[in-house]
Image (cartoon, rainbow, N blue to C red; front, side):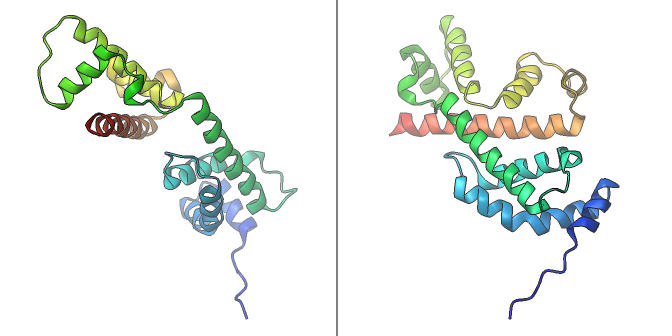
Length: 196
């Protein structure tokens, strides 16, 4: 005989709406198996399942005030999960993977010199490097591109970025960290292609 779940979603949601962090963790723990199952079933290529699950939960909490109670809460969350996966698939079609063959000859030379730790001396290497950075950044989602553009290319402070975007400072720091990791992965992918 299977054990019935004693988790009271309605009571937990009431506590979450009162900004109870423990209730929010309980809600995520309760819904995680459902969300990860959906994510795994619809997982787009090159997307980490944990990142996508986290995005689903962020959307769930951001839209909590939209939950009307006309459908069971897990069903509502399921729709968010499926929609998030579909959005990721669409985004991949708009931003196809950058491959070594997509680079111009000069960009490939600059990347090869960077990968082999050679110093580039030609004046037009800076332009090729900039074009390469732009191609790599075009592979990122818009919020990731934005945070890197503002922080790293325009040299704005975290406080300035927070003010411009409306994100709090912690969100800016986390998003920048993740965006840099994604950019590094793209760079490493190109590096592997160059070495193969």
